[in-house]
Image (cartoon, rainbow, N blue to C red):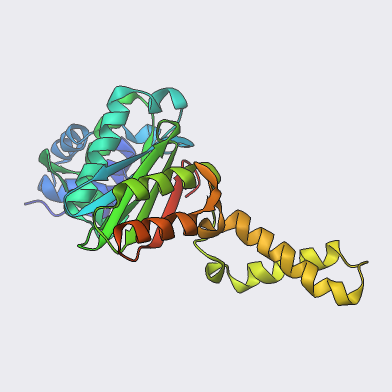
Length: 283
């Protein structure tokens, strides 16, 4: 086996444009054979795709997968909206979401390095590079999220605008309330709450809102200021906190009241414990 030197790695990088780490791996795997290393990089889709790697990926798609043990979200980006509507790109995003749900990786970095289930000879990141060749644009797996299921949990994801916005909601207290969670997920897609409840609003944000409110009513009598500022802060909570928002399907109910009513109906206490709202490019 030929000794792989730093100069060999630099030469392979110069000839292929592939990163130093991948070049070292390729040379080690090829026992120092430069041409074989290049061939292996090309087979993995890395060498021919590398020229696209530096291009910006501002468009994308968020895919969700509801697995047996968890629900997974993944954002996959490309250069143009045209490619994100391509069937090959969309299928890749859906397959990647399923891979995440089935393997529950600890991090994005770990996920990219793990073997692709449909071809264990390549990693997830190498499969991405292969798909890049087909769609003709740079692609990036931007972020992932996995929420585990449980006996007393109901999870539901909602996809909006063809995958440009995806929301995920968790309700604790019962495992058969996916319909309720789905309704709330749809509400979140439309109303874009920032926090679950007022208690979750950071102290710095609250202080800033109070300062703004105070400045807006500084000419009011002193005895009225505190009450007016409190009212404006409550209005802020009504707009930004999920449980305080008016339900889009029935404005006579807040989300908190909607959940309370369902709790009474089924005879079990239900609680919305967390939610996310992902939008392409907002990572």
